[in-house]
Image 1 (cartoon, rainbow, N blue to C red):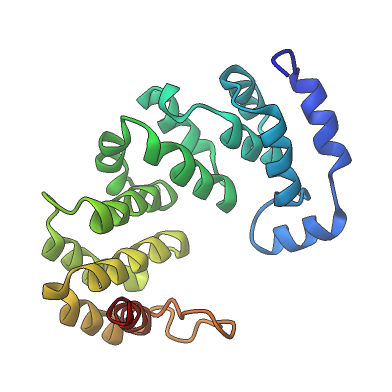
Image 2: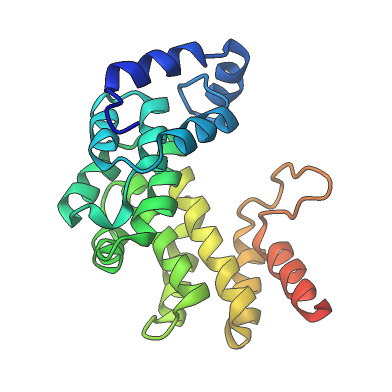
Length: 223
């Protein structure tokens, strides 16, 4: 489908619009009504099309941007282009998919991590923290883990929601992956009580860092 046009894709996305899906998505801050399984099926049919992905992104439509992320070539974006895209990605799902499906696979990911980490925009900073959490788990060499805990201890309690979630994830990952910092990570979580009362469905792990760390370490030991 190399000749697929933006107009054709937008028309197909319109047929996939479901008011019930929109209602659920909007409760999570996402302004679209396309079932994500159907969106993924459309992406699978379109296959990778970088130019079409760029054009879909430029529409500003949330469903189109999610589709663009699924059909793009992550390594083809320049650093400045990704920086601009992230700053435009204001809905949670677009932001999360852009970071996880594109930026993490791009050769400029480390440069962007450093640039975004202390950005004055908390949503942009949350992307820097998400990339840092990835390194905590997979490539910790060179990271100042104690320094990260210092920042979390000082700033997480009063951070805006999206940034607070990202910092909390980093806190938990440090505790899970690095035994030498585990006691301090748990202590910080217990004292700050961030997400302590977050409603957690049955059979899901609480995002409260001390519980999260304890559960994941237990699973590692049970393997």
